[in-house]
Image (tube, rainbow over all chains, first blue to last red):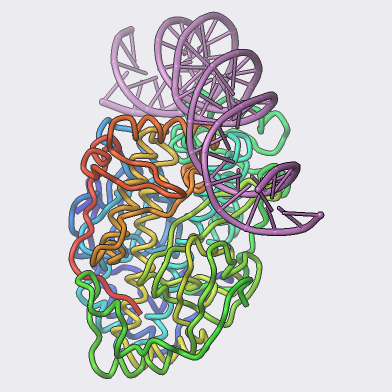
Length: 252
Length: 252
DNA sequence: CGAAGGGTTGAGGTAGATCAACAAGGGTGG
DNA sequence: CCACCCTTGTTGATCTACCTCAACCCTTCG
């Protein structure tokens, strides 16, 4: 299934799911919790750099990230890579492929990763038995769409500096919402400059120069293999971006 | 509701929906047809250039395009505009806003447009009463996601020439699938060079030069306020793109 | 200790932006 | 009817943001 990945029976019970307690996520009704518990057929742990899903293949599973970072990407024949989005705790991976057949992007772990494994074959009973969960799935897909819209605006119309500032603010905000900065965890984005470059659609050299410029202004600090955002509002101002997401969100 | 738009009671009965007959779209079950008929509360016609939905507002409706072309876009404060995707017959508009509240993009008619109007308030009963339609909605959202993924790859990693070739092939393919070329209708894409520029993330001058280059190779022909694709395969080859969508697709 | 993966920096090249004209309709008001 | 404007497309000249190439540094790891 995944290079450097280890599949096991569920270790984390849905009833004890650490995500459900976090402020940003909505809780389940009791019968929904029962269903999701049975929907979850396994747990997958993967090392940083492991490939979880591969473009062009079919997968019998979809996943929710329990802990860690991953990203979705596509590559052109000659190796040019575009990172499409990042996947954080509470996010789904593989929904597109589950609904429509073949995967059209790949997914790779950015850090050590823990995922809940679901059977795609049971999606039908999710929709028929738990309409609210069906609604949630659509909601989740619509949320992804929104993120891609904003990202598209970035690539199409923002300068390198604006783009980089936007991405930093966006990632920081999502990491915080997902609870990755909770109880004293380091507020670090585990994203290398190569990943930034491939997300921003820039060369790695120009990415480096742009990120240095932002660091020189004191908005961000570079760490070993990652960075820490010091002034999210300042970044948003540079990018001309105001995030409008708020409140609790569903997850499966 | 829409500048230059006219709202009326449904004129086209769902039972006589012209889309249902087209090869590319899946048919409804009888009870689904009944539901959709009651879900459709009106019909909207709009002139080319009319604004259908506005970023930052809430809308009580969502729409399916019956005939004509529209597009979704976002703008930055200083007026830079990015077109996110085009909306053709059978496509939904306003789903994001219906699920998540405020619209985060605008929608504008590219040609005279006819839309079915649905009440967003009845989405819940769609999911609870007709799980297959709920599934279809998720499917439709996932399809949009795929398109945006490919578009993101374009903006991030393809050259101007590759990007333009991809967009032409993509639009031509979608128009054909949506049945816009059926029974002897002109095989024209009603997209101005300004629209191309705002979709490709290029300046209008460079867009013009790039499109001329493609026209000079005989892959496309320029008409008054639009263009006609002459060699879709040739365009796909330039772009390094192979479309993998196939078979029937759902719509609401 | 050598190799490999990140990050950093300067020099020079180029794809695409910006600026500036101009042409060809179409619409509108006089 | 003409005179005017506005929109859309077209083309050349110049500029610049970003790319490529080519170093070099540091840390980690086998």
